[in-house]
Length: 148
Image 1 (cartoon, rainbow, N blue to C red):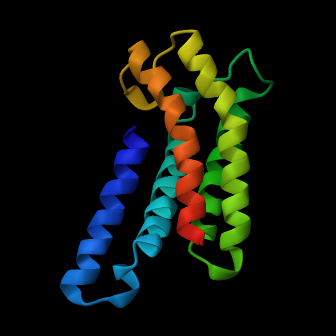
Image 2 (image 1 turned 120 degrees about the horizontal axis):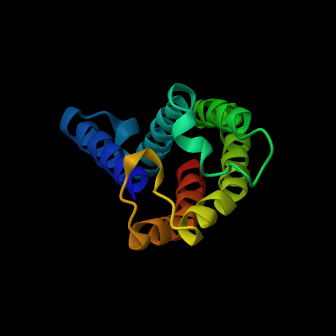
């Protein structure tokens, strides 16, 4: 939900700036949504690189090399997030992020089922970890809406 809040906040801020300053490219919500997604995926990717140990628990015992996988997914999130901003790569970045979100979904299910704390120090309450699962399809939809 924090990720979704970030997406919405950035998109609406860019949209408001576009209208207040007369920047036509920022007056299109899909452009603002694309920039918001890029910013959020880059930020999340950087968080994976800065504090990988805070995320390893999500896949530890489930997949081999959990530390390396967290680093790898962080790098992918950064590269694909930037890719959303490059017209020639938007489509491929959209597919890459879609595949990445689907691949990471089992880790989020595991957090909810095993009643593990939510990543990033977010609430460890079952309602929160389970509700996070509902947002994954929304993120995928957001990406595709933003690039088309």
